[in-house]
Image (cartoon, rainbow, N blue to C red; front, top):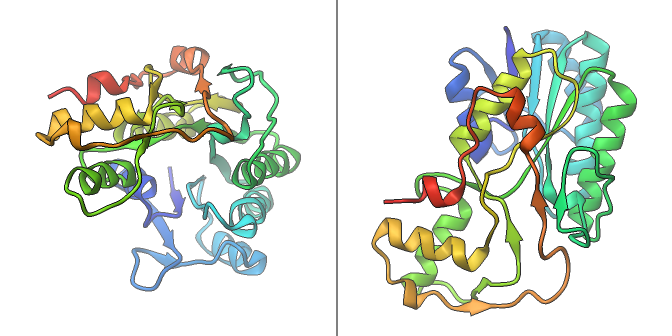
Length: 260
């Protein structure tokens, strides 16, 4: 299976490429691994995909504050996949949901309330319109073994080098990057099409998550300030039961993978 990882210099993209062993990656910032690619450039995306002719494309690229990258860039990747016959696995987000219904399975219709969530929902719509056999994999907060953004923020808060706090009213289903990458590759190699929910088994607030990180890493959990977000998508829990039943990869909960 010839695999192209779009966004291969990112936290998730790097892990997908590492587990795939044989893959080609793209990056946006100079100096990254693989081919430099701006997914906002429709013609450039088409040229690269036509040149490489991958069997599968895993698209992990996004910029949270940039509609064009997140929504239109995903559409450009999907259009190139459709033109070349490549299978597409696109990474989406739990933020396509508002949180009004709290728990969401793969049958739930997006109702975003943030610009980023709207961009991700627009990307899903474009992909579904362009490809009949794509996988759209929604996920949640992605953690690792100390190198994710949330883990670094917890360390900075505990060390007094960052301001702010960890929300007690924002609840998600965090997933470990190795589990997520393995699940994406498994979906890529399968015949499954449609929406997949690929999130962890535990629903936790960002503050609860911070406390678990602090305990794992020997930090002072009492030094982690609590805060409230107050508005926006607060309690959003992806129900991954249906997808998990299709996978060999076990989607561990944060209480398990953050245990010392």
